[in-house]
Length: 316
Ligand SMILES: Nc1ncnc2c1ncn2[C@@H]1O[C@H](COP(=O)(O)OP(=O)(O)OP(=O)(O)O)[C@@H](O)[C@H]1O
Image: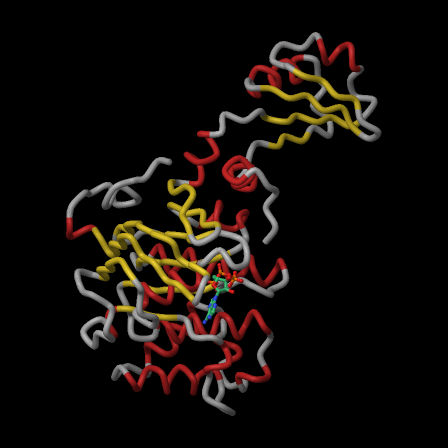
């Protein structure tokens, strides 16, 4: 396992000032079950850090302990240099936690929800408008929260978590149960939040999404972190083959076998699949022969990393 040290993420500046979170040896038991089993990680300031894993991996329990909502059985947590447990009032203005949509105040419009949350921190007015704009809800400002779509409600709950301009925000599965388009819209919002310098810690069971959004990820299973690094480094560490496929009829099997870089060739019903450790060589050879029509290239993903780590297919 490769573990990046303090501040070696986006900031590249090692040292205490660049550290937002330090978690060491976290344990949580529910009766016989050890839901979180010795979890340690560090998040640098400004980093977008993802905790990934299938259902029941222990992501939410970990997040709730880090947020100060749940007491750990063992281990230590420092958030912005402070301990979040027992409830630490000094941290509250500096961190944001996305509440479940069910925690909205009843019968209020999107704008009123934000104003109400804002008033708890003494902010309002322009900041409310700015947040509506950030999450793309300006034209829904007057709409009651229970009349918003699932994606819009998620975006409103993200805006509520950000209303007081925290240094650090936590999102627990913000894109769960959204359709693909709504998920993508939310990715833009999450990226924008990060580009403003906010540290983001989020959980997801969508590995493809984490690969796109996160600076670093921790892959969890059965209460433990199995690997932690940038998505690219985790995938690179597999040294997996690249799969280059052409629709049938573009190239014969014999021609494919003669191509430089094509290590294995498999003729299927619909396509011819070549696997290679040298995709550039193989693609160049195909280009020279003018055989790139309909080509598809698949490199390894975090799902392959999960398979490699656990020996089983990833099931979100
Ligand atoms: N309050 C609780 N009491 C007893 N067991 C719990 C409690 N909360 C969680 N668990 C169990 O602890 C394990 C980890 O749950 P957790 O919710 O942290 O996982 P998760 O990775 O967030 O999963 P999901 O993606 O489904 O939310 C699961 O087996 C769950 O059933």
